[in-house]
Amino acid sequence: MAQRSQGGKDEVVLSVRNLKTYFFTRWGVTKAVDGVSFDLKKGETIGLVGESGCGKSVTVLTVMRLVPIPPGRIMGGEVILDGQDVLKLSEREMSAVRGRKIAMILQDPMTALNPVFSIQNQVEEPLRIHQHLRGKTLFEKAVEALRLVRIPAPEVRMKDYPHQLSGGMRQRVVGAISISCNPLVLVADEPTTSLDVTIQAQYLRLLRELQEQVGLSIIFITHDFGIVAKMCDRVNVMYAGKIIESADVRSIFNTPTHPYTQALIGSLPKLEEDVKRLYSIEGQPPALYDLPPGCSFSPRCPHVIDICKAEYPPEFIIGDSHISGCWLLKDSPVRDESELGPAGRTFLQKAK
Image (cartoon, rainbow, N blue to C red; front, side, top):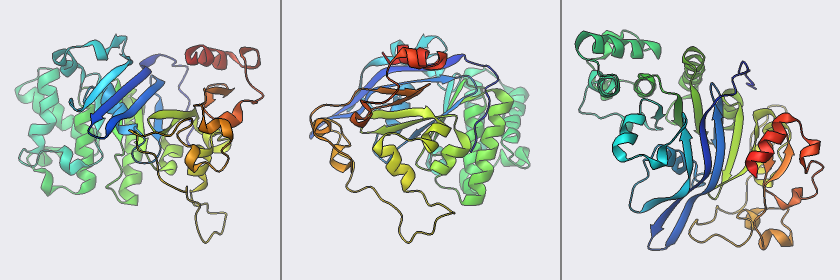
């Protein structure tokens, strides 16, 4: 399990506070992101995990101001990137931030790349816009970006079109475009979904190497807890538009406290156990325009109690930087600042 040292770098490059994004549809108001808060430090990788439809992708699309309007609308919150609230920027100002300070790797490289433009056109575009490069310098920087993501013979590949490359190569090109302007934050939205196991391992190794070389901070969206163990320092578990548990990666795997987190980890195959059928969570995630009263997970939870159906749980502090929103934790042994270390006390103040 990867637990990498941050070398004492506690600088927060991205701070998200009480972020809310709703979609107004004919069926009602869909609360896709409903009060999400987290910090991302320099050189850190945080994971956003959960089932499809829990709000992971909409969270990062909101951070990048890419939510389609209408039907979407950012209802409130703050997104402080490099000391600046990007939610208060005009669209023109935000266009200067995307690609330069924060970039994104989309999960499907075939649709992320334009099939009618060459690789050269698409890798050079952010360099031309944000760094104002031209001519030979522009070409050399684009080649350098392709070389950084291990594209063989990059000078030759510059003339190719997306359909001439394999899925793994296309995903590397998307990565080259994302890191070409040395952003502070890289959002990786399930970047290994379309890759086979061997290429997936190579791509994850490449991302780690790039992070170490250029000091990237990464938000990694995935369903795969194997990738979480390998890539992430912290994990935010999302359900029904909210973060229901947040902790460092070791705590999530060793001492998960929310029944939903426990169920997700319990559904993973284990080499040391001989099982005929993997555990599965009963039922389906709720429609976000018609959430049940109380805890959103209560209709599927095997440990549900009466209060779960009536009132949404607050965030309980389990330990240093470990929070969980479940009524079963109301008698948790760690409940106030006096029982926490320095990191926990700082985290508690932010949670308040």
